[in-house]
Every structure is written in C-alpha cells, then in structure tokens.
Length: 267
Image (cartoon, rainbow, N blue to C red; front, side):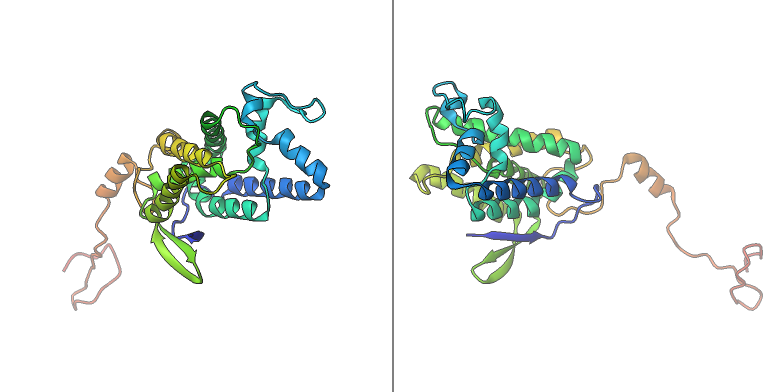
C-alpha cells in the first residue's frame, strides 16, 4: 500500500493552501470532540451526524432525540466525522499532499464548492449502491477522492513521493493515484474490506475527473504533468516577442575600448 508523503509540484497562483488547511483543522477538531465523548454519546453522534442511506431516502427514521439535524444535512456533516485515528490520518495525509495543487488550480472559493460537491456526489453514489443501508457513513474520503480524481487529470506525470515499507520512492501520479482508484474497483468486485464505502470513493473520484475542467482556471491545461510557470497570455507572448534579444551592443572609442558612453559614435 502506498502512503503519499509529498509531491514535487509547487503552487503558483495562491499564496498558501488556506482552504486545505482549514478542512484539515476542522476534521481534526471534530475528531477531538468525538473522542472527548463517552462511548454512548460518541455512537449517538455518529448516527446523528453520519449519512445513513435509509434515513436520507425516507425509509427509516432516527429517534427524535438523535435526529438533531435534517437527514439531508448529514451528507455534509458526515464529511467531517471519522471512525478512528488511522481513518483520520489516512484521509488528511492524502488531502494535504494533493489538495494544495487543486486549490491552486481553481482558487480558494471554487475549491470549497468543488470539495463539497465531490463529497455529495460520493454520498449519492454510496446510497445508490444500497438505498436500504442503516449503517452511517462517515469520513472525508469521498470528497478527497474528488481531489484525487482532479489531480490525476491535471498532473498525471507529477512525482509523488510515497512510503513503501521503509523506502521513500518517487512515482508518477498516474501510478499512485491510478493504482488507488483501481484498488477501489477491485474491492467492489471482490467484496473486500467490509465496512468501507468503496462506492463513495469511486463516485467521488469520478466527480473530480468530470468537474475539474469546469472548475479550474482557463489558463491551466489538462494532463500537463508537472506545473511550471503560469501559461502566458497571448498579449504577453506578443510583448515578449517585440523585446530585444538581450545581446549587449558595445560602443568603443578609437582604441577599441568600451567607452560606456551611449552618446559616443560607433567605431
């Protein structure tokens, strides 16, 4: 299993990944609140704020003392809950490594909308697989799957440094992220890893792939691999073409020595 540590893909259009940091901080704070509760209250919080397909589709109802928010709102709240430390850390590592470049590609506000829409798409894909499920779905992985899909489309050749056993290896994003997506389909096909919303991961990744062309800035191409300097506008290219080539013309005096005086005649 690959554990991403960092990528060789700097940002160019935002000063800092403020939204990504805010999402990570929100998930950590919510989880700290979860573990501060007693076991019964923690379980009730999962049922009250997690996305339960049967409740959202109206087939089942929660007890009034647990149904503290409308069922449809749990699609959003579920994105900030996690089932344990490893669940939280795994999600936040992926988000931190990949999220800055997606935030850079579309700007802060578009990134907020994109993240939430991918999370919603993931929840609906999970519900479509089992409308009658009474198990609450929690975790940011559906929305983060959207980030993964978007990164794969934007920067398939960017190097992601991953931890494999005790070794750190730099691999192209298409191998790391494409392999991760393939693993989700494999688990769906084999029924492996019970208790994990594999279809939510697939739905979120599909949403990221489909939506990134509409959310990214127009100047950013798809499948560009490594991000270099921002693509210059046509006007900037024309201005650059009119500029001198940079060859230094030297004015020399009668002895052939550079006079440094632009008013001296050519010799």
